[in-house]
Every structure is written in structure tokens, then in C-alpha cells.
Image 1 (cartoon, rainbow, N blue to C red):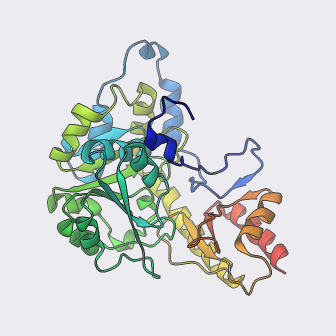
Image 2: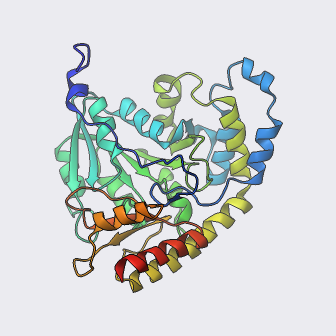
Image 3: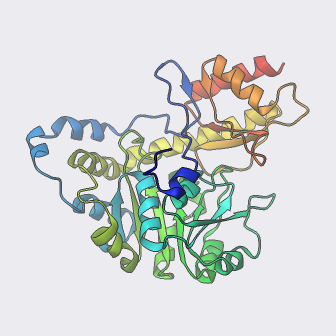
Amino acid sequence: MSRHERPNIARMQGYTWGEQPEDIQTIKLNTNENPYPPSPEVQRALADIDVSRLRTYPQPTADLLRQAIAQSHGLDRDNVVVTHAGDEALRLATTTFVEPGRSFGMANPSYSLYPVLAAIHDAHVVSIDLQADWSWPGDFATQLNNAGAQLTCVVNPHAPSGILCGLDKLSELAKDLDGVLLIDEAYADFIDPELNHNSAELLSKHDNVLILRTFSKGYSLAGLRLGYLLGDPQLIDPIISKTRDSYNIDHISQMLGLAAIKDQAYAQHTWHQVRLARDTLQQNLAQLGLPSPPSQTNFLLVEVPPTLPKNANALYLLLKEAGILVRHFNTPELDYRLRITVGTPEQNQHLLETLTRILT
């Protein structure tokens, strides 16, 4: 430990990211990436970029992209800030709305970056266990308020379970919380459209709500690192004008993000394909004795019952040996489960055939 390191940094544990193998033959079903490539319009936009533009700084607030994002959600540009992926959005929300030494709220289990960002900021983490059905306890807001949580982050659809919380319950939580509620919708593009889940409606009812979205999942741009926050202008403005890095979105990312979000026909086609594959994969895994909660994401949280010949960690290792990566979390509440990203039909079939060989 360096003598220059802040005490809270010395005490904390960093984020553990999913494996990113260099071998392109490995089937990656471990980090919830979209199995389909970005829109062809993204490729065209990349080819059309004039490299001489890179000599100067990019448009400071990514206004063309902000406007396109706003239109896609039926909002105004003032409701949007573009960020360097969803992770920067989380960091900016923490920096802007949580005082060092005060409380950051979350549910457990959840996105494991949340407590890392809070620790970096020297904030106290208030982590409240979810119930057996992955729902919040009835006194969730009361516990958070009593702890003085200035920012609470909830993933919806939930990670790692994939379960969707309805808008009525989210609205009630926003109303009951004293602090800011950030709804992390990293996986919202994969929600069944028949459910008519439009969280942007919450912004007209609550001035303490931020909604996080990312291009990583739905738009197949995880390698680009692009995301955004939606919210009341009074929440968005201090992020844009005070806490955001200067020129935080480079010119290339702005142009590619714009191309991706304008091609809604392609994006929605890939979301539909993922949903179809998800439902088929869930049924087939259940037939192998590997049930999972109903998911509105691009992944399944599979339970590995003790009646099977292999436990979750053994399955993870055996699949890895076979060239298939899934995610195993070594925590008490998740140790007997595997999180499996929905791949292409061909990848999913290979996974099922491999699991069948292992389990029989």
C-alpha cells in the first residue's frame, strides 16, 4: 500500500469484471453482451468519419446525440446527459448527489460496481437484502430514509435475477424516498413490448428520479462505452455543468451512437431475436433440471439444485474447459446459481448439448 493512498481506497475492494478471453473461438455467455453485431449504419458512420475532425475537441455536450436520445424517449434535450457508458453515469450520480461520509443505498444482490463507487467516494453503503422472490422488503424506503441515503440505485430489470419491477412500485418508491432514486435500466431494451414498460413516464411525476440507459447491451456497443441518464433538468444540469468531465464523449462515439439510435428497426429486430432465444433457452434449461426466474433481460439466472451430479462452480469450470464462459458468483446468496447470457440460437444449442453431456 502506498503511503499516498487515501485510507478509504486502501480499505476497499475493486470491481471484479467478467472474463474477456482473447480466443475468439470461446463462446462468451458471461458478460451479457448482445450476440448480434451493431447496426450496419454504425459501420457506415465509422467509415464516413473524417479523421481531420479528431484534431479538434468534440462537441462538448454531445447535443446531436442528446437530441436523438430525447426524441426516442419523448423527452426534451434538457432531460438527457450522455456519459462514458453507464458506469460513468453511476459515478457522476454518486459524485453529484452523495456527500462523502453520507449514505448510498442499494439492494442486495445487485450490480457489484455500486459499492465500489460508493467506497471510492468514501460514502457509507446501505445494502438491504431482497426477499426470496427478489422483491424489496416492505420497509425498503423506510430503512433507506432512516439511514440517510442520498442516492439509491436499483437495477430494473433486476440483475442478476432478470425480474422486472412494475412502474407503480417504482413510482411508490420514488415518492417514499427522501433522496434521489436512480433506476438502472441497462437491460430495458429486452423487456417484452407487450408489457408497455415506459419508465420515462416517471419523470413527469417525480423530480428525484434518474434513469440510466446504455448502448452496451441493446445496441451491441459494449466496446464503445456509451450511455446516458434521463431525469428532471434540475438533476441533469449540475451533472452537465459541474461534475461531468470536460469533453467526456469523443467525436467517434457521438457519431456511432447517433447512427445506432437512429436505426431503431435494426435494434428492435435484434431485441426480438434475443427475446425469442431467451424464452427457448429457459425452457430447455428447465428440462435439464436448471430452472430460472422469469427474465426480462438478455440473461438467465439458473439454479443448480443439489440433486444434480455437479454443483454450480463445477458446472462453470467444466463449461469453461469446453470453451463456454458463463458467470459464477462466489457469494452465499448466489453460490448455487449460474448467470447465463442469451447467445445466438447456435451458441445456445451448443451450450445445451454440452450441459447434457456433463449432467448425464
